[in-house]
Amino acid sequence: MVADLLDGNSLSKKMLSDLKERVSDFKSRAKITPKLAIILVGKDNASEIYVSKKLKNAKAIGIDAELIRFDENVSEQKLIDKIQEMNSDEKVHGLIIQVPLPKHLDMQKVLNSVCPLKDVDGFTCWNLGLLLQDKESFIPATPLGIIRMLEHYKIPVEGKNVCMVGHSLIVGKPLVLLFLNKNATVTICHKFTKNLSEFTKKADILCVAVGKQNLITAKMVKKNAVVIDIGINRLSNGKIVGDVDFEKVKKKASFITPVPGGVGPMTVYCLLKNTLKAAENLQNKK
Image 1 (spheres, one colour):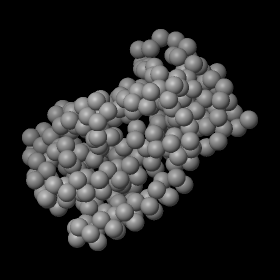
Image 2 (tube, one colour):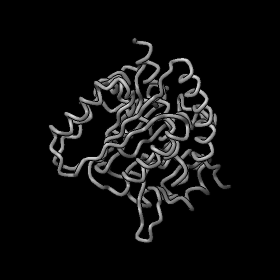
Image 3 (cartoon, rainbow, N blue to C red):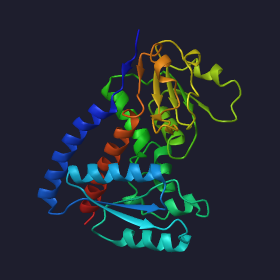
């Protein structure tokens, strides 16, 4: 048995095509173009790649996108001042701060400076609080992309045992909330978890977002489990791999995401979908 691929590339292309039509309809009705502003601090190679994909896909579906760069030594106040300027700019509908940020910046303070109505990454305390309450909000793009992928492939979540390895604000914690809101039974693991395999082997759906190559081996996975690999690791030869031993685990799982080409493309799609949603919401408030 070899697992079916959860192909984020092909799925996101179809969804982006549908989203392009929705963007076109909105532009015709509202006579405005949705705009996404991206603030990038420093020159992190991975962030540069992610930002370029967001800019490219935004342009392809008719969303304006602006990249605002800051030196890695930028002061926190200067960065927040720019965020406030974007908050007040009526032409900007979505605003994201590309993470990670340099260590001298208080990441949560910076993220919380984004207007919740333009917080298309869903990282402000306002939107995370709404998610906690299972209320309408902007949901972080990577967790939302994973849920949309599971829905597309008709993989049930309700009543399933889910193991989330990794508890970051960006992926792990919001993804756990989404699974709980869909009535899954969720176990959260992290670097202090002892005997990790005891938990992973019980999971019907195993999600991993740590950033450690081959953290999850075949013997740690339940037969026919659904494996969602969110990790990204760059090898010395330049190859990108996830946190899961893909070649061996795919022989045991029922579904598995490749890295690259799994979760990443869905993240970009959901970010742009949130941007259109923000434009629609702000237009309706006028």
